[in-house]
Image: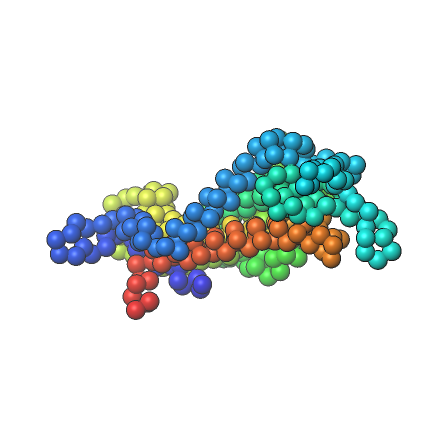
Length: 349
């Protein structure tokens, strides 16, 4: 999806032409009506709701199904399989028979339904708890990114001149860094040292560290399209009219320009959250994202790296969760773009 596809939001108060005998619909009412008739968007919303509900039910699963703590090692634990008590970690049978192999998936709703990891911890329980952190980091990082990008793009596009040049150079510098290289560099520094923001101190093992890092590195990807849209609106007739009646720059930005930019931010939201979830998983897989004892989908994949040939579901299960969530978010983002872009119907026909 190109940046030009995202810059099609109409001016505030735009109304879709009504058919004869039908009342005129507002911009947002028309967009929601399109979404209600978009089956792919509805399916994606239902999938995302199911993922969120399942992850939020993690404490219930741990308390009433697993009846244990999924964050504590259980190397000497046992479980019931077919009416028999078996060890969670069993003697390896392949190769020289050295070491221990965790119990495999039981494929039934109950303890160790997806098997155990190398420390005897329930994979299903950790998958649900890890989903909480992955979704939380992705969501908060998206809010940070969109907020900073909106403020930066609005100020740069509206102010112009030296301010626009300085902000643009700063965005270009961030843009020049490979995303993952920049995120990895910041993660290594901030994990080893606490982050001090005024009177607030954030420890290296806090979830706020990956939230802030991921939120910052993607700011140029949103700020540049927002700035371009503000530049295109800066000399519009309704902006000149607002200036003519003596409206302050702050009022023009908030009441006239921001409503036109808001639809662009709405379209970016699910797309950026998908990118943020993937970035968090990559950083956590490299052990520079979510830090133990907390878990995320990326850390669980890392835990299953050494079991890929014996118990592959330790890594496959969180991988499938990431694929389903990211795919749903991307499809939803495309549906939002089509619903909020008044020229989408023209382009598709």
